[in-house]
Length: 402
Image 1: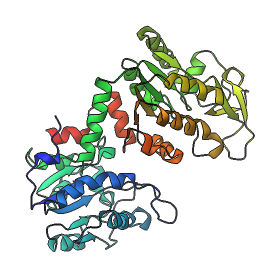
Image 2 (image 1 turned 60 degrees about the horizontal axis):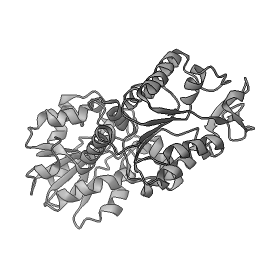
Image 3 (image 1 turned 60 degrees about the vertical axis):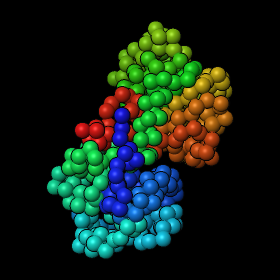
Image 4 (image 1 turned 90 degrees about the horizontal axis):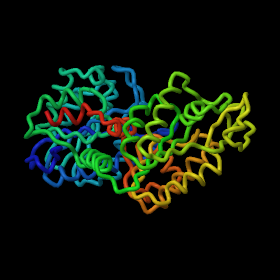
């Protein structure tokens, strides 16, 4: 059982919360989707209600360690936090632009904090020790909290100092999961172990290799498996179809056959696209055709599922009681190849099933489609949610329990 912040005696203490504020930002430095920030607010407010001094740490993208670059600063996150938290006390931010995390300015701000204050540290990846899981950097971070709370589900699959090493410096009475992390772990565990049936998994994305373990595990759990996106072409090739210049992982064709064989053996209904949107190149201006999967021209590539496939997949979802969706149906970043993904999002949102959306690209599609509020649960972690589906233990969670 994962211990949560409610199990800790934090009243009036200092708490270091590892958050995941790795949010999308446009070329002007504006946050385009603040769901990850909003998701962290319940844990932060819980601490503030108990008169704690709260220190927040997060990574953002992949900066060059030790070098300050404006585009990798957490300053936009600080501004959004200020607007969302609306705390009566102080919200501090280390604005020294030092290209470091544990700066004299950060220590100075920490020293003047009182109960109810919040300090946001600069991007943790500015320090080379973060990605190296360095215990010395973890020790410096631990000086910012008598208690350690991990609420960064999206980073829990990584062995980084603020996720893994730091947890070893606290005993079980002084470390726990935040509300978001606990919710994510419990939701996936419950759905995978005891789903309401029929249980349908919709899996997309570009490559089979990235989701091979997940597919192998889901085959023994689900009643139906719907496969779309670029990965579908490896399965279609395995069935003997010519797929032109579509993305195919030749070395995984046998694996694809094995997965389809397991599905048949387990009585799992297996769905692949019956038609596709094809173009000679991946471009917004390219000529497109809607063709059956048997008729893809040799020099063309499939970039989205077609209208017949979306209708077929909708039929597959009709009687579902649980739907897990991970991966888009096409190159959704380009408008002309986004229809399949958007329609799937609408169909999943309109169903009466419990709907779980994997993070990353899948959550992005649901947001673009305007369906986030209609889904039962939208994960904040793409890679982490995939690891949970695969049945792997996440280093961040193991560290909290040890």
